[in-house]
Length: 145
Image (cartoon, rainbow, N blue to C red; front, side):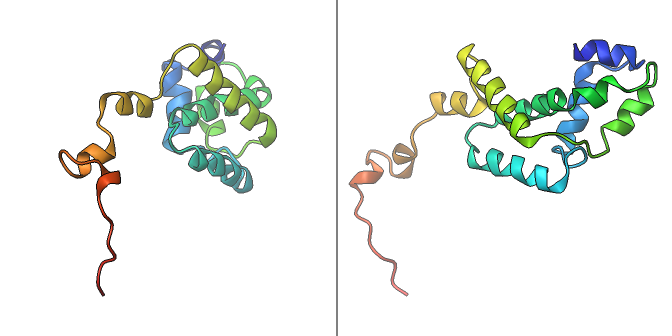
């Protein structure tokens, strides 16, 4: 659907370059009001081990702001670019619910976050700390002043 909107606006760039990338570049600072942006980032930081939530947040923003996006005049690519740099009014509870829903759908389909893949192929911190000795086996002593 988003590609149809971009095409209708006369945007010749692919959707990921015309819409998604500008939102990711600014981390949504341009399109969310400060209070809404802080709420979103509270969630993203609290779930730092799930970096895919950022992409889900961008898509959730587009879903939440689709009314304004759909009202942009046809064949006006510069209007889209300008729209992506202006604060949009969204309902944050809806945006967050959509973000978590999109993320849950991706996980249910078997899409793993990059963090999960990295952990799957890496050693645990305990085996990296001291070769041949688990971190839990080490005696911790206070460092003298």
